[in-house]
Structure formats: C-alpha cells, structure tokens
Image (cartoon, rainbow, N blue to C red; front, top):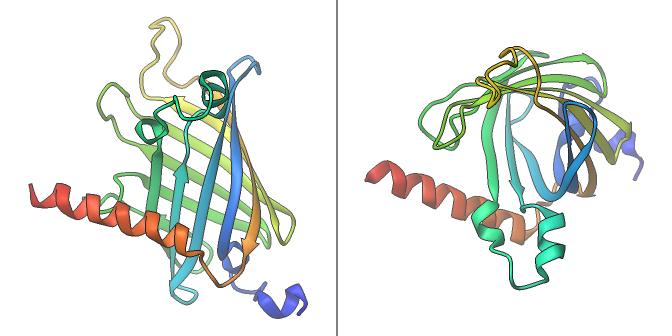
Length: 203
C-alpha cells in the first residue's frame, strides 16, 4: 500500500496519525548539549478531520538512566505526560485547559502540507514557573517527523535575564511504528493517565 492511499494529504494533520517512538534532545540557550530523553507518542482522530487526540509520554533522562545503571533510576518519577484533544478548523488547531487531561494550552497552524507550527503554554506548577514552547514540525518523509524550537520560561532563575529570552532549545525526532493501529502498550499508558486524572478530579 502506498503512502498516498494511507493519508489524505489534503486533510491537515492527517499525516500525524499513528503510533510513534522517538527522543528529545535538550540544549541550553548557548547551544550546549544537556541531555536526551526517549518518548512514545500516539495520535488518532476522535472526530475525523475535526478532533485529533494527542498523547505523549516522556520516559525520563536517558543519560541519567545510563549513568545510574539499569534498575537503579526511578524512571516513573520523571515521566512527563502531554495529553489533549486538538480541535481543528480547518488548518488551525487549538486545545485549552479544561481541568481534564492536561492544563497545557496549545495553538498551531499548518503552513503547508507536512509543515506545522505550534505554541504550547505550560502553566506554573510546583517548582516550575511555567513557560512557552514554540516549535516547528516537519516531515522529512511520511514516517519521520522532526520538531525543534525554543522554550521560554515565565520567570528565569537568573533575574538579570529578560523573561522574553529562551532558556533552552528542544529538538525531537519521531519515527512512525504503525499507522491506524495503536499498540496495546501505548493504550495502557493512556488509560492509566486518564485514571489518574479522574482520581485527582474526584478528590
């Protein structure tokens, strides 16, 4: 089956659908390497062409896992989840905080087929002051997705640094491992996430 029969390239965001694995590389504002972390990602239509489900789990700092040796690093303590529904009309997606899933606010746009621009706004939470992640997403081929952009915190630890300056750059690479079928392992993670959300809401 050819790629053109799998995706409708005339439908914005359809090329994103499927299960993906990848990694994120963090650089500081001067371009110095900080660490690498693996991720899994599932994307599927809840309402074809209108509502796109996005679920991503970051599996911690890979460099720290290697340094501490397998089995001695609390990976579960550093997993970060991004889960939301993108409402698309027709090239412009938006996800707003609703007290469900994730408080992240998302806006974006398809500039041309296979090229996307996103702004993710993270709220202050715990010790994190929150901030904004601006990224460009493009497909080098239908099964390889690249993402890169700066992260701008709401407040810098160094009070001399303007709040508008970015603190880091995040570069991500994802490879599609399946099209319409989301692996059971990925589905289990999303179900566990939703259970945690529901339990937290009931307290």
